[in-house]
Image (tube, rainbow, N blue to C red; front, side, top):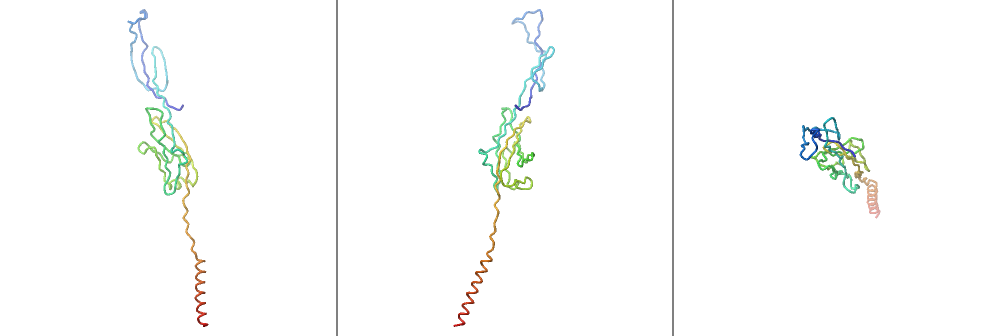
Length: 201
């Protein structure tokens, strides 16, 4: 289990009583000579005439999850972009929460976008950003990596495949020069033929 130890140390002296006094219900043995609090990272210590007990908090790592389900819905379309929902990521500790979400879109180990609590666990990535010079992703399947952080600095990861659809290529029809030329020649030849026929008559 990945985690961090955080806790409070409770210090108190051992109960004391005269050695000659037999133990009975009337014997007042619960005497606390001093009480102190201190932050600790260990679990238990005992020394000399004092006992030291630690109240330890074990921080569990957050669980990252990329939505939607099925993941095949992660499509980036021209004129739009890629929408990634990571709101299903949770922290198993009831007294903790996820404070930061980060995504790596081109598998270079650097996280390209990050959202804090103000921006929330949703990413809208423009199509031009995916295919532009900063990420340089072409049409096809790509891997997105998610990293989440909790308030104690523990992290969790998840990955998913997203698809970039190819941009439509505009086609310009070629001018019908050859056809128009033949039609023009035929029309001119017909006119000339009629004129020659009329002159012969």
